[in-house]
Structures are given as C-alpha cells and as structure tokens.
Image 1 (cartoon, rainbow over the protein chains, first blue to last red):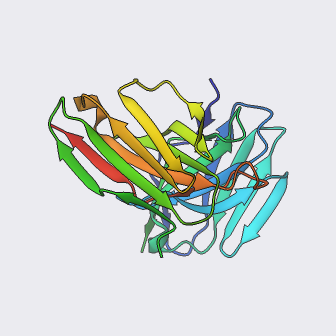
Image 2 (image 1 turned 135 degrees about the vertical axis):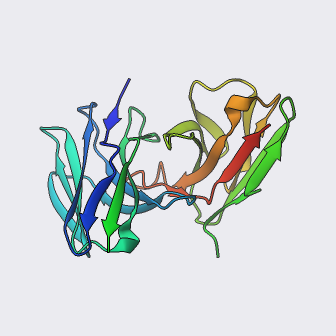
Length: 111
Length: 115
C-alpha cells in the first residue's frame, strides 16, 4: 500500500515566523507532488505543485522536493493567522489518475 | 462562476435510505473523481471517470454507484445508507490524461449524515 505520511500537529508558530511542513512518501517512482490547504469546513485548495528536485517558490510559499530521500516540504514565510488551516500533502500514485493524500498537518499561527 | 459544484451541500437521512449527490465542472476537464473524507480528515479516492469511462474503482462497497452522463458531470448514488457512510464527499476534476500533471480541483463538498 502506497503511503504518504505527515505529522498531524498542530504545528503552532507565531505570526511572522516561518512555518515548515513535512511529508514523506513510500512510492519511489512518484513524479508529481502537491500541497493543498483546507480550512475547517471547506474543500481542499491547491496551493503548490512540484515535479522536480529542488525548490519552487510562489509568493510566501516554497515547496521543496528531494526524491532520493522521498520527502517533500512546504515552507510558509511571514506566517499570518489566515494561514491557520490543515495542509494536505498529495502524491501521484500508481495510476497517473490517482492522488494519494496524507492525513494533513494542522497549522496554527498565533497573532 | 464555480469551477466544480456539488449538490446538495448537506444531506441528512435515515439508515437504509438511498440518496444521490451530483457534481458538475465547467473547467473543460476530462477526468472527474469522488473522494470521501472521514471524521479524522483522511481524504481517500473512491472513483474516477475519464470522459464517461470508469478508470479508478477503489475498494468501495457496491452500495456506491457512480454515474457519468457526460464528461462534465459525475453523480454518486448510495443505496441502503449505513451509519459508517457519514462523511464529507468531495468531487474533483483534472485535465488528465491530456494535462501534463494531475492537478486536481475540488468542489465544495457534501456533508452526509446518516442517522
């Protein structure tokens, strides 16, 4: 069974700090990786995708991928209280149509 | 201009009833999905259709039957509802197979409560 692991948290950071969210995956052949943000009672919203090793930056968000170590991370710079949500890591599974989701990390940004 | 829409948003029903959830996307995507998110927030794929053809059918009780009348619509019918079916059901769509990567976009969800 292919797995995606995340620490459930909550990860608590003060406003303005860098929040670092991590995800490991078991399928060595996975090629596509995604971060979704889910506010309580809402649907998952795609915020970052990454496909090759290294860093990818988009505004305050940076996704990092290391295929050799099978981990992907999300950094949120200058964290805001509005960033408080659950962050879901998703990895393309054994079918190119399938995403396998981690159980999510709850982030709490303290004002 | 909602990209992926679902109806109803809430569904409260008795055990043993049959119910349907409808999903529509106006993104022009070829592939649609049903996911179940349980109380622990774990999001799991149930079904996927590509241009009306079933391509993913995870280990789901056969009380659940998806139907795709066209590539913009995917419905989920559930027979003989059980307490354990209570969850939030999300519809999603992606450009697969034509899109290079499987970026999926989610609808607002349907919260199903079985009493």
